[in-house]
Figure 1 (cartoon, rainbow, N blue to C red):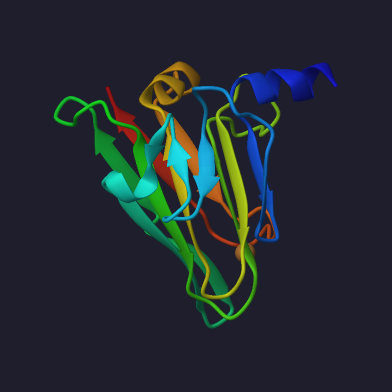
Figure 2: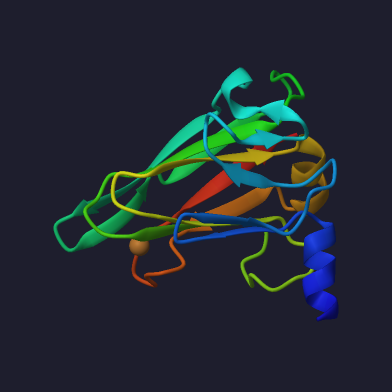
Length: 159
Ligand SMILES: [Cu+2]
């Protein structure tokens, strides 16, 4: 329970089966939402540039989050929140889990999690402060938490 509360404090957002359940409504924190209604740190997604589009695709038996690497160089980028647009291009349900921790358990870990129906798109907004605080190694990972064999990728931050 203590772990749960800490996670909420750092902006945990869990979205399951398309139903948005936000546990944190404070000023900061990672947010998952739709283009028209979603926002991060008070800035609507539709007014923010998308940093990276990511797609769940199936290549025969292989399930992949594409692209396998996302790199953002903050030396040349303004400090606005990072926005990912995640789309399920396949015919089955897939998850998108972005986290700063390989263990997926640390209470201070940055975490965004969503389940996407076939054809569904969601927006993930990450305040840069959360990003820098949580990713001391400058690498985050994204994967599908529904399928262990579903190939994920890395999100590299150049500070
Ligand atoms: Cu999957």
